[in-house]
View (cartoon, rainbow, N blue to C red):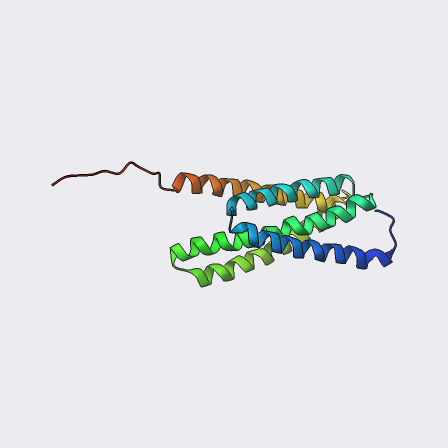
Length: 167
């Protein structure tokens, strides 16, 4: 859509790889500081980036920036999701099962995303339409993350004043 030559594929893949590296690095560090904040922020950013990418996919500059940010924000979700799953699994007593299921769900998500991208292109929505489908999936994930964050806040023990008794 940008009209760039095939020789630019290496550049796009390099930009994508740098985005993955930065997203993984930043996501891993920030997950320890504010797990749910990072998760919701990165999903919101991913949704926004994919929407901009869909709207301006014919711009070389927007495409290069979007490819980097899509990879970075997408990969910034990996560490917090893994940590969230493992924390819940430890409490439930099934960390190994949860770890394998989490990776399986990442792969299922990849398959669903690829399938949905093909569906929207086949439906005649254009070459940029997988970005719109990706934005919808990221937006749905954001809603789930917000519900998890809300539930975690409601489930956390409230501090109560100390009760003292005398015998």
